[in-house]
Amino acid sequence: MAQVAAGLKDIGHQIRGSDQGVYPPMSDFLGSRGIKILTPFHEANINPADTVVIGNALSRGNPEVEAVLEKRFPYLSLPELIRIEILTKKLPAVITGTHGKTTTSAILTHIFEHAGLQPGYMIGGLPVGKETGFATGSGKWFVIEGDEYDCAFFDKRPKFLHYRPHIAVVNNVEFDHADIYSSYDEIVLQFQRLVKLVPQSGCLILNGDWTGLDTLRKDALCNVVTFGRGTNIDVQSELIKVSSKGMEFALNYTSGDREICTTSLWGEHQLANITGAAAAAEFAGISPAMIGEAISSFKGVQRRLELKYRDDKFWLYDDFAHHPTAVAAALRSVKSRHPGLPVIAAFEPRSNTMTRRVLQNEIAAALELADFVAIGGVHRSEIIPENDRLDVENVADHLINAGKTTIYSSDVNQLADWIVEKSADEAVIVTMSSGSFQGIVPLIRNRLEKLRNSVVH
Image (tube, rainbow, N blue to C red):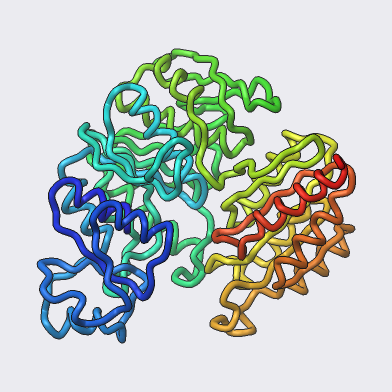
């Protein structure tokens, strides 16, 4: 919300905000943009206001929410604000799916920028080399990450239904957001509703390798393009080789063009993200050669298998993985990049789905791909009923029975000590969480640096 606020201020709006508490770096960012933030929440903070944007973390009982309702101030959700103030004047390219939204959005934005289209964008992470994940842009295109999570306590529709897609990319669909959805079918229904919003001149772009997405075709009155590595695919990728520098692959386009591309990214999931972005870019009128140039210069997104430390024996990666499929993809990727080296996985159950038992067996199966596993405490476990809460001990027992050396603890210092102890002579360490994991990355990095220095001296 802070980045959107700064972007709207840049185009002439007067903006102020409030929160229970604001801390660096966000407080510094907002201050540098001349945006006043009032803390803590108080009904006086919103008086007077022409329009109040209510975030989806707030609910009835919040003093400012109550004041808005009592005083009958106009209010809306952040997705609704974005639609009204930005997207009605743009051609939105909405990137959706359970996995890969952020990276695919960042790649497509980079391709548009490389082609000189000056797009606007709203990306859920920070692309390497950018200072912000949001810009209004002067061109006609606006790339936006479309989430199926709800908008606000008063608007339970998925965010992406506000975004009026001209291009809709669907990377994949799995069960997620267990706090608001009760089944996979309920989530699929939201994507069916999204597809019905794409105009006839627009395009639905589907991952043709992902089972179940083809059912979305029946709801489309627009162009439909598939992407992937399988047969009967419109925009097809062919992996040529993987090396320590990334991947080399071919892209076969709907035009019949074939381009050999390179990327510093690696992993089958990243190849799918790249191919989906390339399919969207081709529909937007960018030449395959230009797309290939852009892909080769794209540097990635922070916290997507981001290398945080390396020396001649150890590699430490940090990843945003917070679903069993994403955990498995991250671990397969590092195993393919570092064949033969032991992999140590550190996983924090943090997201609303990962802290619950609904995918407990899948979490255990994904973590089996590692050689050693460290599991952190369940985030905000006290608010989850015990019979619904992820049973970390059960997951650990499963892994131990599968022959994996495993520890679980809510003490991140204990986890960091254990991880470095198990690293032995060489190892690849991957931390995975949708949050900070209580600062475990610098804790591990500091211990590895200390270990290296003790060997040197």
